[in-house]
Length: 363
Image 1 (cartoon, rainbow, N blue to C red):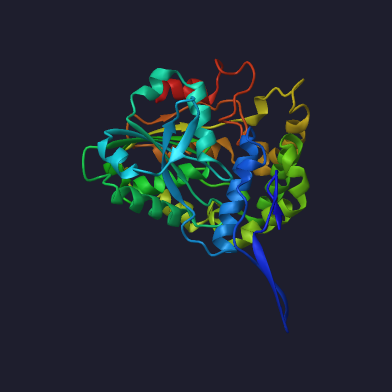
Image 2: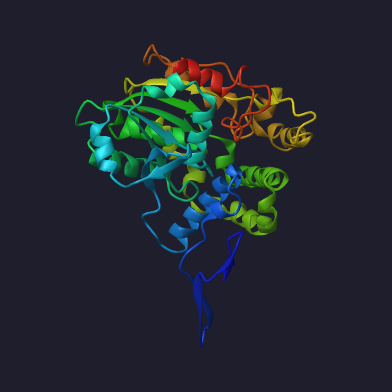
């Protein structure tokens, strides 16, 4: 039995035999019922749900490509019905890829609400690819995405794609483009907070430190997570042992080194990094938290060099990687933000040096 935020539900069975009691979980309640307005809750719970469905329930079809549909009441939803028809008619497509513990729909809603209408009106279709981001190797996810896009005809006609990606989603996008032939249809890829040369949190001891601070952030600013904090902390601290996407962001990993050895695909990249050091959290809900986080993480990570609390700016920008590549590539100065705040609008920042200003100029 589980409580989904509103009701108790039967989600499995218990069977006793000579070896003890065995519990079989058939489903995990939809996390969106926890708080309809809580984008943060949906992101982390959705990621955990997708991971548990894959690992514990052995479901293989957890990744989904869907299109954005604006309803008559103005709300934005994701649909799969008639997706083939929608893609078949589209010429210019925007693809959104969330990051670790992210949520594609919430990421797009933030983009929709904060960019000028003209920035998005040029696209015939917006696609969102939600994927299990904690356990599945990034190259495996990229191959699945590339195969899905190929099945829908990308690379076989004149359809062109722009990608907006965050965090690990940027590594997946780069792999599709540089290792799976995605450069045949991706014109422009925007990397936001992507650890292009890895992160120390790909190492187990570093990951445990990051997981603790990430959960501190969730507990302080996502109240509905508090009752589950013990379970989440145990999961986050042991996730790196699963050997999936987390281990692959180690700067020494085969994944990072193979990806960065790719030839120039010719696709245009825009690289957006963040530096948490300049964040002014005084007087707000974050008051005092970032100073503690920067003390716990920033000082330990790479000798106190500029970082977004997940990766150093040096890795996010990875300037050496882009040397000699497409002359249209742009490696921009860091915006003032932390890793999970790029797509969160903070009071008084929309017209400043934020991801919104940069996207409005580049998309």
